[in-house]
Length: 139
Image (cartoon, rainbow, N blue to C red; front, side):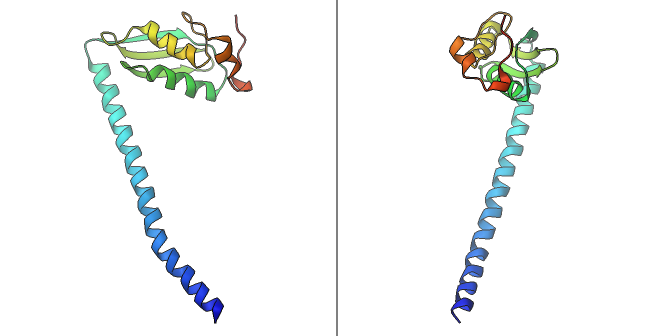
């Protein structure tokens, strides 16, 4: 009898929690889609803007983790629209609002997270804080 009561209680709890977790998952998915849409609109408006410029420059790194950090650092600067880093060529392709930000500021932001660029060197501490797989040969 006790087992039946416990089982019934668990079923009731599950019945109440399941819709909540599904709703939370749906809300998270909607939020991701809205963010992707907004990011795309921002990037489209950036590229369509008269002051939008593109730049390409070398950023030293090794792997997919580096790619994520480099691109995140670059786009964290207000006025930067998009960044795409190629781990084979070590080149970053950047789109940015030239009236809002100087490209040197983006070099500095990337250096702050541990990666050397053509115009900015990461501090020894920032480089040392990188995971082992991200430690590139420094010049």
